[in-house]
Structure formats: structure tokens, C-alpha cells
Image 1: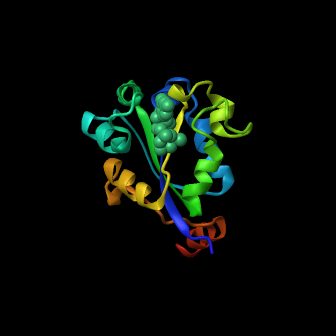
Image 2: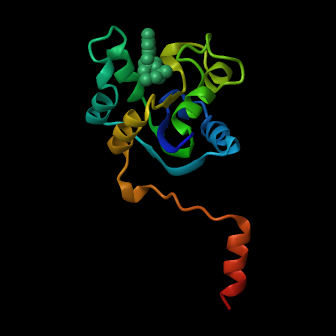
Length: 157
Ligand code: UDP
Ligand code: MG
């Protein structure tokens, strides 16, 4: 049984600088996920360390920390059925040259060091990462379809 989940997504500084925000957000929306929180921000030292704690000590860690702080990111909460795995599937493998054509990393990136997007790797990671970047009152998960909005509008007078 697939579960309604929320995941943390970031458009990394290279994606923001290259003008890919709209294209990338569109991929999640057209898939049918809900973007329930979104903001642009400069990642602080504390946020970078917390976000990538699992990679501390690895050879690529110092460069990864510099990369994620090299310009603003767009941070998002994305919700939907099986959203954690589904979002990573849309993003493709960490290395863009191994990612399947049609995924974000295959289509928009060339090297692992600048792979445009981040997506949580588990429900637990997602909750941990969401808390690094968002307060719960910044997440808006209510959605209304057009007929509900029209009915509300017509009933208002
Ligand atoms: N990364 C890198 N070199 C590596 C492995 C990872 O530069 O050899 C960077 C890359 O930007 C990646 C991030 O570190 O997205 C986090 O690595 P992870 O293995 O968690 O990959 P992801 O979950 O982002 O696919
Ligand atoms: Mg990861």
C-alpha cells in the first residue's frame, strides 16, 4: 500500500543560477505532487552541516558544503503518494551521466558535483531535512479543486 508522504526537495545553487527553477518545479507539479512549501534562501553554515551530516569526513564533503552555500537554493516540501521514492526517481541517479534520460539530473546536469537538485532518501531523512529548513507553519497542505473554489465563490453572496 502506498502512503501519502512528504519529502524535502532543494534546487541547488547551480539550478537557481542557471534559471531552472520553473522547469524543475513544473516536473513535480505535472507528476501530480503538491508543492506545500517553497522559499529561496542562503544556506547557513549550521544548515549545511546538519543537512549533510551523513557525509562528514568523506573526500567530497568540503566541496559539497561550499557548493550548497555558493548561492541561494530553492527549498521545497513536496507531498504525494510514495513521494520520497517518486521524487528521487524523477531526479535520477546522483551522477547525471548514469541517470536515465528524462530525469532531471540527466536532462539538466553533466557532473555529480553540480547535479542541480536534492531529494530526501527516506521518510525519516525527509522529516529531519524539512525541520532544518522549515517551520511547520510555513507548510500549507490544504488544496482545493476548481469546483470547490467555484462553489465557494458562488455561495459567498
Ligand atoms: N556528491 C559529490 N561527489 C560524490 C558523491 C556525492 O559531489 O562522490 C555530492 C552530490 O552533489 C550529491 C551530494 O553530494 O548530490 C550528496 O550525495 P548523496 O550520495 O547523498 O547523493 P544524492 O542523495 O544527492 O543522490
Ligand atoms: Mg543523499
